[in-house]
Image 1 (cartoon, rainbow over the protein chains, first blue to last red):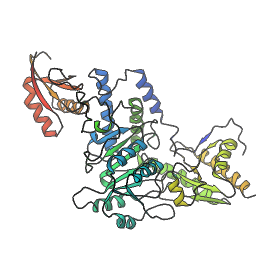
Image 2: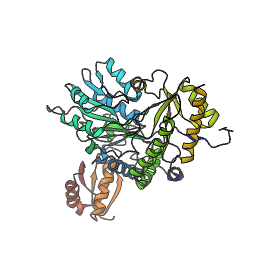
Image 3: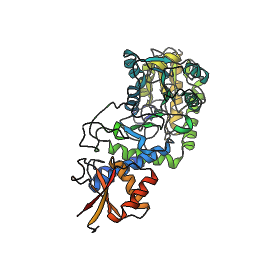
Image 4: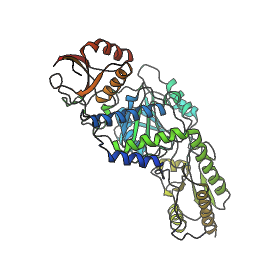
Length: 397
Length: 77
């Protein structure tokens, strides 16, 4: 199959950010910049109040989407990394213990590296070959003074899904002794917008999400949902500044969401996110999951039969992506050839997740990740399969 | 709103005020969102102005719904 440079690219990098986005997102952004888009909560004129109403409506929408009762416990951030930093640095103190999965992204591992220097103890749980945790292993790890359990719901390297509901149930059972700990923090970067997640049902106390991946929104949007069992007094802010409230005081407000929302919100991005989220709700998560799972499975099964290929990730029980390697070629070469020779856009390397790659045996070389999205066509899947098939023929020579 | 006697409901933030206006809307209490009068607080947010005669009803609604508000202040024009 010759790629002549005029063929449309095949975008297989939805794990990094989703593309394309729903048409309604473009319309929402256009509408937002075409009208007076005032700063929400920073004045009392009608345009500012309209912005504040739109922001509050999105809080309600997200609270409903993720199964949280109080929309004021939805805190907007610049993305999941910012959200995870608030939770980790806000809650953990020297001497505390933290337990996490082996599939955590550097958005967790880098903060943990810093926290370990200050005396936080970190334990990485054992797992199966895909990085999935056996709930029994978590149960035995939940000893005092465990303050936080961090679980990446879906790996950004191999798509492996953790059984959040079972793990969340164990964390709740361990919350004895009156100190309110341990709590469960979940990174939903690769699962939100694809898999139904409900905080109360799944036992999640802190849910970090990003807007620009499965939720199909713009970059620079995301949030941290803070469950009712989290003491905001003990969850210290990471950033201090103006909130539009209590302006007479130089002390950060203690109420939500202002405690964690210093500075002007990304109202443009959030207008887009509201639109994308509505699109997802109209489609229905089961429908989107079925579509993405079918695309992933078609890719997975077709590639599994190729000579010299090694697949990373479970065949089933996964989010919409997986990784592979071809014998005799490194991940950078494969990803470059897919782009340059076939117009197939993928991400090779370590995907900002060295811990995950260590666990699945692909460190330091990394893997090539294939991440179709809800708008990926069957024809694009077949082009990707054909491209990898040709490369695998070369690699075997 | 032409009443000489009116009240304002103060909230911790505009987000709470927006919830407050929704509740008052649902209960048919005439209201308007205005900047917090500097004479009663030096914060820069919004508050809800209602008729003085609606103060008790408004307080009842907000309390019943469990919405956080700071206080209701009676004022005269």
